[in-house]
Length: 403
Ligand code: GCO
Ligand code: MG
Image (cartoon, rainbow, N blue to C red; front, side, top):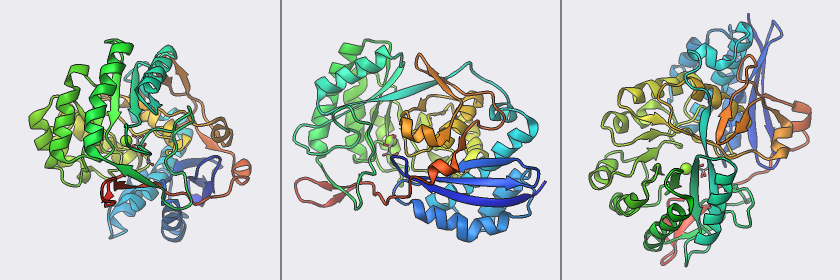
């Protein structure tokens, strides 16, 4: 079997997506997600100008060899652009492998480890009352795990809050929007938020929260300690993770579980955090961490240390990524939870998916491969629209801060 063609499909059905389609001489094709929110065209060029010419004529069944070829052969290793491009190729090849075998992807990975995949939804509100209402609405829809994010008194625009019930999409402007931040206001507010949410939602539901890289290690330790009475499932990205040792300081002060890794793109970003047991969940994704082939290695390392997966699943990860992730989640033994921000009807009109949601669980389909495809004609109706993620500045002096 030979790869005969490969092309990148860029579309914007409500937000930008970058999809790779690989075709073979036996009529089978596969798709992969290469969306890097706010930097999409860098991955498009990396694929089109540097990777795809090397694929033509290769045997698509040689998934591992092609992965090694693209990783070691680039000389310049790792990074979000490189690893998203490799991920798209890898995911498309696993999709083709499933179609050759006539098996859904999870069967190729080792078969079903669970009946379904527990997901967490996003409850957001401009204030505590609105956020509590959104948590209760998600509970009524059957979610067993819910992330709560709310506005912070005294801050204008805060991460994770869309307001007026709209779907939260951070890449919302033609040039980076400027948000303001004040950690002290956030640290005062957040325990009050979870006191109210836990009181309203009861003991059972898993509550999650995303700190989004904003605190210093000792501030993150304070937050974790202050949230212990509300027994969170995790706090996510409590501090920027370039300095992995920072997590040792957090660990010394709090038992609130920690999740990190949505911005990681290789096993090297999280190896030490896992081996030193400084985190409880690893959030790396198929799209940004080198595909199924590499994410499987990360999950296997994590399993040795009882670290569980908690893959990132915001809407900037396309339905292709979600489809493949559900198969991965169905197989992976050390599964924790899957983030699930439902894509809009418009987005799902461009991507055909076969998963279903029921009582807080997602069920992957049984189609060969990962079960997702793209309608290229429809995609062409929604051309790329440059959109940036926001930047963040400290409210009191305007200095740049992690967004
Ligand atoms: C999450 C993430 C997102 C990111 C977004 C960036 O936990 O879902 O933090 O909200 O900010 O995916 O593109
Ligand atoms: Mg996050």
